[in-house]
Image 1 (cartoon, one colour):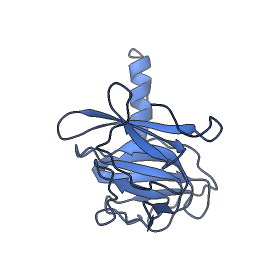
Image 2: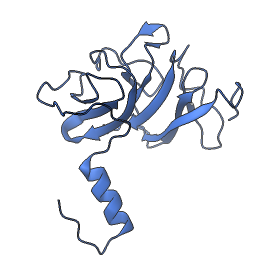
Image 3: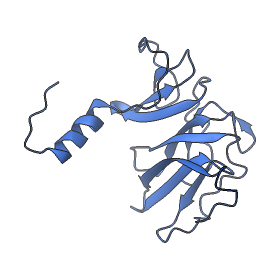
Image 4: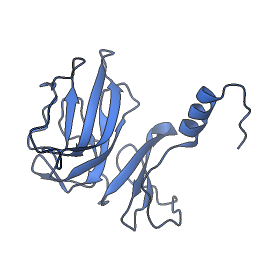
Length: 178
């Protein structure tokens, strides 16, 4: 795939692979380019089955595949609209590119820099804009009121399982304790 805009405007900020119901691996690319997000076929060509319409009105900073096998993705960034619909800086897109605003509708959060999945369908988000610099969301988009870490800005986020899993993959003989 070749970006239509100049190289200055076409910055890739996020990549994700989501496995859909047909066991196909979908490659998502997000960033600061027209529409903010796209999906690629195995040969690198644009996948026309992922229709974003007008897409995002700002940049995409993070993409994470939903862990329910749907092929859906969570997208975070510095945007306030998706295909003409007013949205939060954190959304869930269906595998066809449509907004899932009925199943996932979080309260406003600005400039989401990172997203990580937590057990039981929870989603962590990190933002560079308070008051939701670090937030925990239920799978319906309701923010967990008990999660209130004292942080000012978050630019990346991962769960302990992600970190420990990566550590064990690189260092299988080392014993990691928490």
